[in-house]
Amino acid sequence: MSLFDAVAAGDRAALSAQLDAGADPNPFDAEGRTPLMMAARSGQDDLVQTLLEAGADPTLPDAVGETAFVAAAAYGHLRVCALLFPHASSDEKDMARTLLKQQGVEEIPARPSRPSEVPPGGFRRKLASAGAYVAGKLGDDGATKRLERVLRSEGHATKEPSKGRK
Image (cartoon, rainbow, N blue to C red; front, side, top):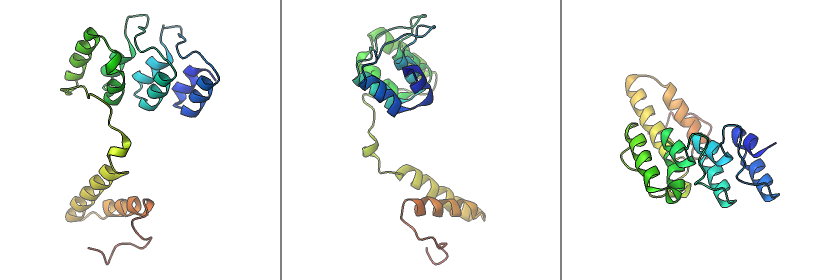
């Protein structure tokens, strides 16, 4: 498995193993892209971080002159943009802002948010709860059952339905 295959598969363990074994983090494919460019284009921020830590060069352009940062912006991958922002030239930052504005994003994040900054499942749980509430008011109990499954999977509810809960 090549670095390109590991990125295409989203396999961080395989990517790390190859990089730890001494693989060059900056090989080019037939289109002049690097694994970092592929990971950025597909929004795989964990793989982008792994490649950067292994020495991947974020300033390398592909055959048409596009860097990983510009590719991430073109596809609206904000976390990847935040990781690559410090390495981008001012022209690339201007281009990225233009690309992101076309997608309704006004500002490139200064740094990626860390998963630890948001409680695990916090947003999903709030969204599921709101959906269950609205669906319950409309007479649909399917959303409530989905919420119960989410809470049960997080260890917050018993396996019994919540008939007695408020």
